[in-house]
Image (tube, rainbow, N blue to C red; front, side, top):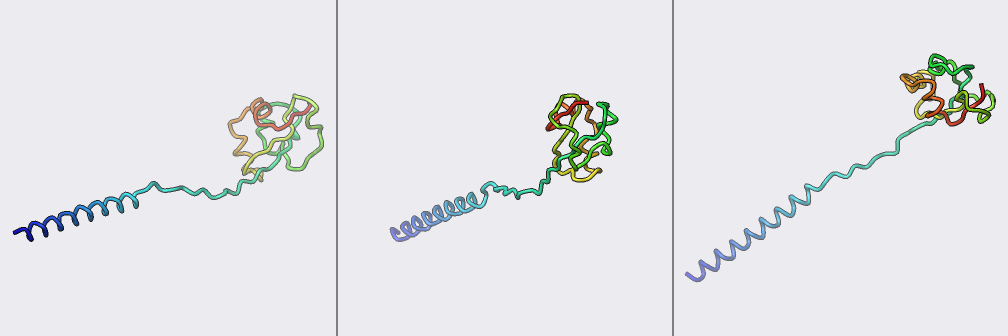
Length: 118
């Protein structure tokens, strides 16, 4: 009789240890996923304003911007935007998407890296 009790005690202890081990393994597998971000290919392009007035239509038109510095005197005043760096806008179509919904004042005062005289 004492042998049977010892066997049940041994079996019960083994089951408790196995259950504990099972929960430890399940919790180890249920750790939060670590998100590894890859470096994105962000390309910044500097656009120069070649328009001659500060109207919404003029500043919102990609034809009034160029990627070649026209040497119109960036930094010589505060009337017009001069240079503006835009991420992922290396062509007129993507520049248009950036300009959509922005006012001339917003472009000049918020987005322009430098300004020039009129």
